[in-house]
Amino acid sequence: MTRTSSAKPAPSAAPETAREKLLASALRVFGECGYDGASIRDIARDANTNVALVSYHFGGKEQLYKELLRSIVVNRVQAALDRFTAAYGDERIQNPSRADARDMLKTLLGGFANNALSSGEILLAARLIVREQTQPTAGFDIVFGSGMETLHKTVTRLFGIATGRNPETQECIIRAHMLFGQILSFVFANAAICRRLGKNTLDRQTRATISAILSENIDKLAKPART
Image 1 (cartoon, rainbow, N blue to C red):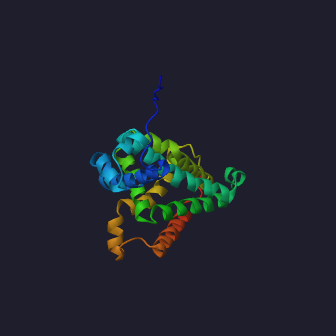
Image 2 (tube, helix red, strand yellow):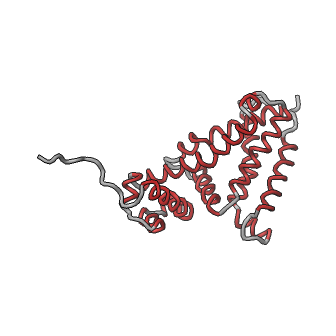
């Protein structure tokens, strides 16, 4: 008697290649159309692959969207945190002086700004993350838990140390959050700032200027709290 197998049939393309192509296409389609405006057929068409491969690799539209969000945060936000930790070391990050905390803020947020604005693809990723802040879906918990919460807490703690504030207070959390707002304004209103600057994109020199001004603002905002 011939045994039958319940295993899934093999996909027509190499698994990693097909999976990565679908994630890249999902970024473009979800980034441009949003979750509701995107369809699996659009994503498969962009990836030049079979619609059935979406189900094979991800199970469906919602699962694909969640995996895309997770990969964005892990590959962008968590990777930036890992580089930051490697640059300064755990011990120094855990016990910085006020001056060190201010410099770490500049490094961490300057790198975050440059990364978020460095290409059209990354800008699409940033817009997806921003959209989850303004119109949260079931994917928000993935965004928050995969690295965004850690980034926010790290920035808040460093800001608290730099200013002599308690990082757990509402005031300190809000002040630290406003630092992110200075960066995200270039994501929200990217077309407007490019038009005002007479540019098609925010090139390397412009991003360096943004980071330099952000550092100036950190110096001003990170003055010790009055007692």
